[in-house]
Image (cartoon, rainbow, N blue to C red; front, side, top):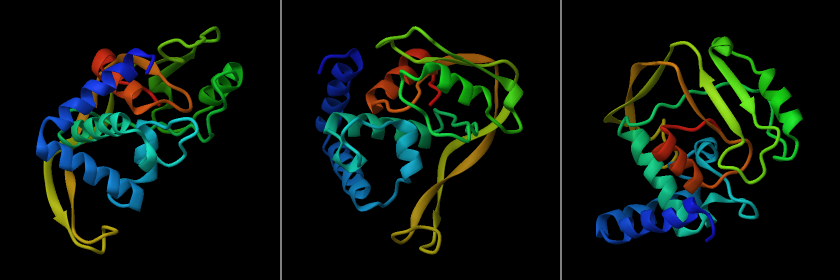
Length: 198
């Protein structure tokens, strides 16, 4: 491990391994991801991807622990997810001009609420740029409470779904990550910078 977020990920994993219930939750999450249960592919990709490991069920345990930490924060209502339709797949980091053009052409009702800057000179920087919310927008977050849904709505029998509540996002700036990024980097941005744009 050679980056600060990869080193910090080991501490996240240690936290899970020190508590038998948390270790069990980590193991169950990995089993569910491998079996395609409980977590959507899109939800996993929102948190991260790892080069040369195409399936999240094969992530190293410390990266799985970071994913689970983010998932727990979102379920507890500590995080707000806001989706901006870009309508394109990110290109490699080196295609900075092209990625900036794709992001500039984004669509959606709140397109004017965001300013996106892609760092044209970055090379192994902490982020690929920034996303700034320039006016208030409405979104939702988990209330931290859940309700049981029947098997018709869940792939593998009854499951708990969080109760969403409205929230107003006020202007802020967060790091921008284009393309693949490890769950540990996503978690580091959330903890250190208050959020991340993916």
